[in-house]
Amino acid sequence: MGLFKRKVEISCPIGGKVSPLEYCPDNVFSKGITGEGCVIFPTDNKVYAPFDAKIEFVFDLKHALVLKDQGIECLIHVGLDTNILRGEGFEVFVEPNQNVKKGELLLQFDFQILKKNKCIDVTPLVFTNLNRRDITVNKYGMVEANEPFITIERK
Figure (cartoon, one colour):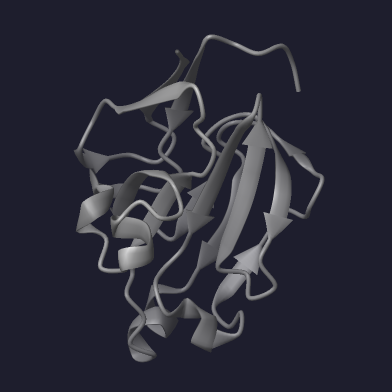
């Protein structure tokens, strides 16, 4: 979707409290096994595109998707243990290979269904392939959806 930029601004995909990734209650994310990023404790139920990208993958269970542009690959994973819902309570508005603009609605979910099924309502935001790139989370704490909060720069 364009030439490689030296610096990419990432917007928050969902409103909520942004914390370091190590605060995620799932070790696969908190230990950085899947990549670098942050965890968001959402106050909203709508997930937006954090940057202009192509949808690489939408999980069949509708709880996660992968976006990619300029060699940056981003996983947005809504909730933990949400796989048990088998897609219930999730509505996805995009499909693989679709180009999206920053701020475009990707999916929404029902907080009540997550709570009723004892799913953990956190959203890890992970960049899976930051080879030769630095990531800086510029704002922790309460962040609005679509507010710039991460910078990724080529080394």
